[in-house]
Length: 95
Image 1 (cartoon, rainbow, N blue to C red):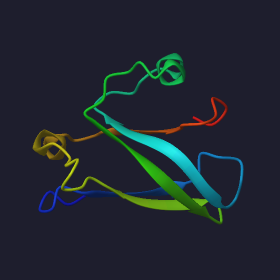
Image 2 (spheres, rainbow, N blue to C red; image 1 turned 90 degrees about the vertical axis):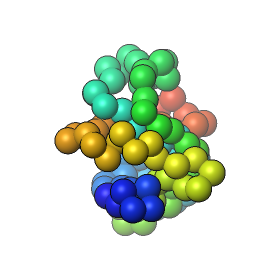
Image 3 (tube, helix red, strand yellow; image 1 turned 120 degrees about the vertical axis):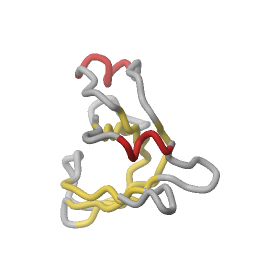
Image 4 (cartoon, one colour; image 1 turned 120 degrees about the horizontal axis):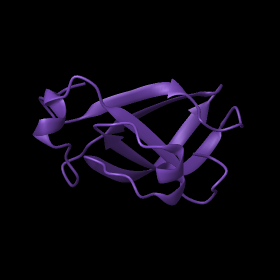
């Protein structure tokens, strides 16, 4: 996490069943874990969100979030823990 340029690089195992591909997703950063039902309904409180073409290779992904057009709020960098929620924009199966 870098507060200098207000970006965070998120890496991890793909939340999707396919081992490789590009997914249209919405990434949200929350200060508390939303319930599965809130994620399904997309009705949870978030500190920041944006849409991405998430590239997955060998079941792994890496994505830098935050930009000059949609910067991460400074308050986010004061949090000890945050939750990252990735939701497929075109399928309710992949959340």
